[in-house]
Length: 270
Ligand code: PEP
Ligand code: MN
Image (cartoon, rainbow, N blue to C red; front, side, top):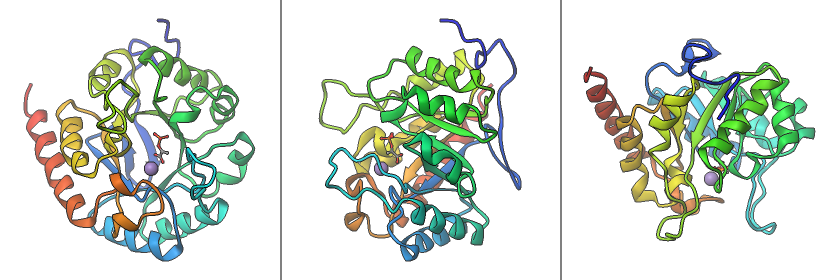
């Protein structure tokens, strides 16, 4: 496999600098927020809790890639506005998914990290479009993608000039359907051996099961991932999307302690 721009031997580890001291690639970063932005009140309540816990990057989907066209599709640009206003108030940065190359430009005022979702990992028109930007991109693993295909998708972005890329392992489809996806935790050390890019883990989509989110976040810390991205809601059962994998505030506090403890242990091993 030839990695021209994101290979480990090409350069030192890439640190994603979001400004105001917020970085990905230094220490263990926790990105959190609801699956979808549902209302101004909802995002405010969640962001206010998260910021008090020291979380600096707020997630929230405004354009939702739902399996069924009849499921909640997200609030679109209105959702992005709520997200941005709320994040600004709490001094947080915003990550959100863009599905359509035609929405990229308009989204730039609202988003600090553009997320390319699993279903779009090989949408080359979209990859090229975000490759022209001077803005960090989080590239999630396609649910059916090999590591090589995933890295090649990242090369598509870098080739256009944008090497501010974060890779996000979010689980792949296997024969087992007990969990929503099979979280490929081995991808983390493999990617770290091959690329200079930060790697974060999404145990929410990676498992689809609320009770597995914290243990798998601990696993991400144990394999020295650069962080996790998790779905949090004050009333997970009532979340408009991905309620089964969303965790409540209490569980999130435990997740912070779990990952902090494991990450600091592993850092002490030389
Ligand atoms: C998401 O993180 O909002 C999402 C839809 O995840 P994925 O693209 O990994 O399914
Ligand atoms: Mn989700």
